[in-house]
Amino acid sequence: MIGLRQVDEMPKGHPLAEIGNGHQAVRYRRRMPTQIPLWVTLVLAIIAIMGPIGGALIGGMITARRDDRRWERELEREEARWQRETEREEARREREIKREDHRYWLELRATTYTEVIVHWRKFTYVGHGIVAVLKLAAKKGVQPEMKERYSALKEAEGELRDALAKSELYSTLKMHIMSIDARTSASNFRRSVSETDTALIKSQDASDNLAETIANLDKCNKEQVEFARAIKNELETPNGTY
Image (cartoon, rainbow, N blue to C red; front, side, top):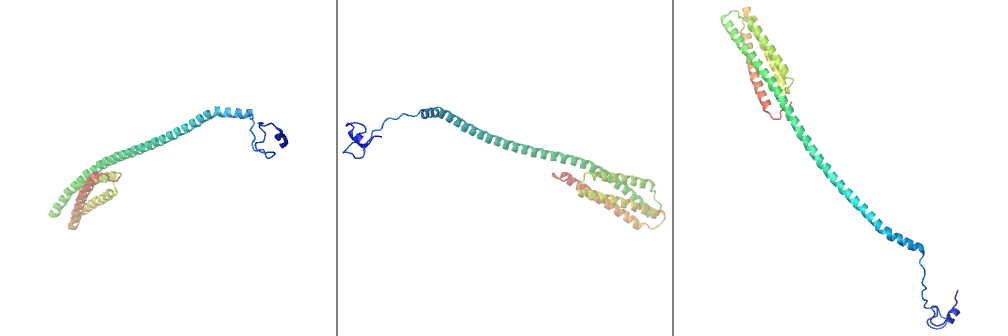
């Protein structure tokens, strides 16, 4: 270790020589050059080499992540568009199925209702003929010839019942109720015809029976007209229930 005396004895101009007066503190000391360790140099070299490489890798990762996010957004938009298209297609297909289904049921109804009207008119046609014969027999006080006519009436009633039963498979609740009423009215008319015929055969007063028979036939005619009107309204309704 160099003491202050040694510093004082150093020639003027020496790096450790005192600048100023006597033995006071050293005011200035020139820095001696130092040697940089090897490992620092290696670390700096590695940093210099790895810096650009790391920057490129990080930049590539950021770019790839950004591309992935953009692709995810594009995929989400495409999936949303595909979902909307699918929903629209399903809705269109469902509407088409409903239209086809509605058309199918309307065709079945139209066919079965037509059969009902045909057989109902046949029944009332036979009924009008029977009423005319009963009126004439009551007026003349003779026994009517009813065997063949009554058989024809029973046959017409059976055909009407079968047509009504078939129509009930495809009809609405309203038409179903009207179908039940029609069967009841047809049955009441046939019963009153039989009672009137029996009274005339026994030479009894058949005026009340004949009046009931005529009233029952009028009711059948009225229900037939109402049934036909209801059929027309139902088949012409665009969104009728089935």
